[in-house]
Length: 276
Ligand SMILES: C[S@@+](CC[C@H](N)C(=O)[O-])C[C@H]1O[C@@H](n2cnc3c(N)ncnc32)[C@H](O)[C@@H]1O
Picture 1: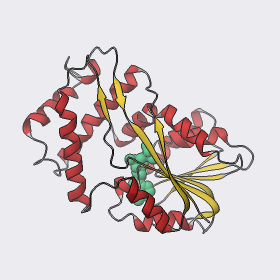
Picture 2: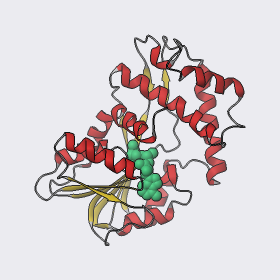
Picture 3: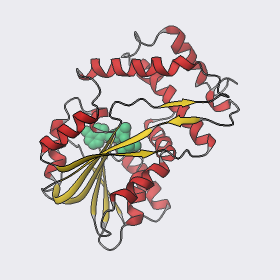
């Protein structure tokens, strides 16, 4: 089973072109001080770092040492290590002074990990300089889907897994998954101005990366199941299907299936606002 960091690398590979598009759209000044909060394997930070010059830096901040180390290693391979600083920290108590950053990027952290997001959002606002922008990537409650004539996967399985995830989220966090309206209202109530939603479409990577992404998504349900939270919810036949689909020894395993094309319906949503 891939470790957490390997899962983040697969994610970065799958969304590589989307990360590039977002960096281009954000148009940070060349000498910007950028913070990537919960930076994971650092794929976004590397795209941003390539755009910067002079005093421009990206600070990657994560609560997991393993993520920071891997992000530094991958930055080093591209000779970007001088542009990318690494900070071990918690988004709910950031170690930075007020008004420091020109741009803060926070992808899949607030909604994914924080039962009460307000403390983290207030911290992000505090360290943003006036005129600086906060960009948060979340899924806005959307459901991504893939389809392929060649993959031997039962159609309704995806719907059941998405339903399961929604139910789990509600029980875990005591609220439903935040939608666009929730994010816009929340960012405005923080004090941000010109708050907007931007949508980016996927340009699918090579077939191996596509299959790895699907395999990883199925695995994520089994790993949650191992934690106990899903055990009662993931029915025995779906658990059995997932175990077979993620088994690299079986011909029916996703990674071993012969596939000519997969279509993905995935939007990447970014909520952006500026500090007055
Ligand atoms: C789902 S991953 C997202 C990684 C990356 N931003 C991306 O979109 O692929 C969440 C990341 O946030 C980090 N994280 C979780 N809780 C955190 C916290 N309280 N403070 C800082 N980072 C945190 C995790 O270690 C992980 O690297």
